[in-house]
Length: 125
Image (cartoon, rainbow, N blue to C red; front, side, top):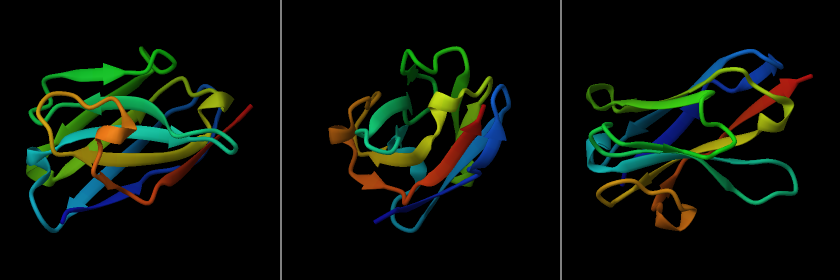
């Protein structure tokens, strides 16, 4: 089974930018999965951030990040990305990448089969 590893988290100032990466290894190639990013802040549930189809042609975003975040993927490199711009303190959370064995987009966490360990993003005010 494919394993996912996130990287790129850390501390950033409000208004700044950060790019997260999700690298896949083992099992099937990333191109056979719909992919997504989720986040979880302390005391809150895991919420949807962005999703991308297998081909990368179709994408979806949570309203809270629309216009600021961009999801992308490079299937040749077995890697997915989340470019985060104009970061706000409320974006602080552990960010998880996930893979779903389905066609199209997957925007619910229940649709995802494989999860990474997460990477912490902290936005200071």
